[in-house]
Length: 489
Image 1 (spheres, rainbow, N blue to C red):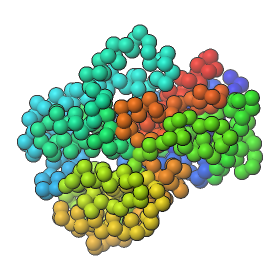
Image 2 (tube, rainbow, N blue to C red):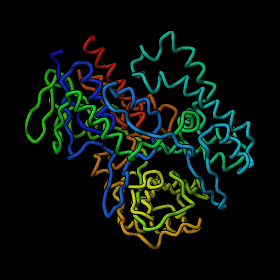
Image 3 (cartoon, one colour):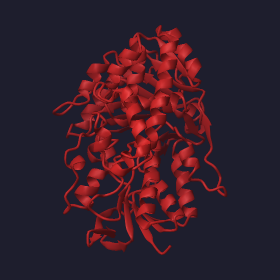
């Protein structure tokens, strides 16, 4: 096929799209503003400590496997025996087994929740995912012909029993008797930067990915996913232009015809933007009228992350650890202020300790702790001051659970919404584009194609179906199908 494509950005979605389009026979070029691929998936290696800087959870590994040719080495990963360790405000601790039935038994033992309630809930999330994912995660349902067809009518009717007009929190309150169990499952709203007190109950399907399908850890850390996909793309003949920030998408007769980077024009038969959708329209297509979802955004949350290299180990910690706030509603109110924000004095703290499974991530006897709290998107806060306050609250909270971070720190760096915005070009540092805080959020999310500009497509965490590695890879599958339809393959 004598056709060419340009992909803007080399995050997980951009790499997967480049591989898929190359397999269709297109000549593919990828333009990346940074010197290495990865997008939000990055790493820090200093003073003997290595940190994954972006996503830390790996689910749906088959989406990577299906991109890997039989002739290429597979991505090495292991399935986790423990999903996460939860620390509640009353200092009770719950270690969540990966086996769904053991999980239900253990949560019943620790929280007093009925085991049948947990097992029933996990069955419900599986049913919801199996019903909805073919349409809402792996299909361009923004094309009404794909949404309202004969095969989908029964599915759409069946989904109504999950009440998309009830919030996640209200649904979980009805499903469980224990406040701790409610809080544990409310947390899954944060997986796409949303608020469980506002997000629709259908998002409870997120729990299915971890508790029914499993959580995984790539050997060598999350960065291995990017390195693996990058090598597959190179082997497939994809050309990479690093340190080449795209300045403009070129249009001819209302068709995407290439890009301009460093003042030079590069032509192609189609263009895929794998970058932030708001920036794509405002910076790369400034003279074109943006869709409503871009002009009136409801941005997701961001994060404040401390990367701590500590010459100590912590027997209390597992790979993934959650220290819950004692006042969850107040924490989410603090994340959506109308003006500038201040950090919660009692935040929920996530600690990722990859050196537990990947010994090379820290010197002997040391730990590489990725310590994160949710933060609002950037509204012009003094983030240096914000970080100092947040650090104080985090250290005090962890110390109350017997984890003292005040000594032995050999390396420390902090990421703020401002630095995340600068590094990833994510508007205001919002990690997932728009939030999912309304029943119509999925419909309002930007589609994977342009309704106005021909042969222009979109992939990645700020467009349909959403953020996180598996959804970015799903968006690449959708773009492949759209391109095949466009080229009549």
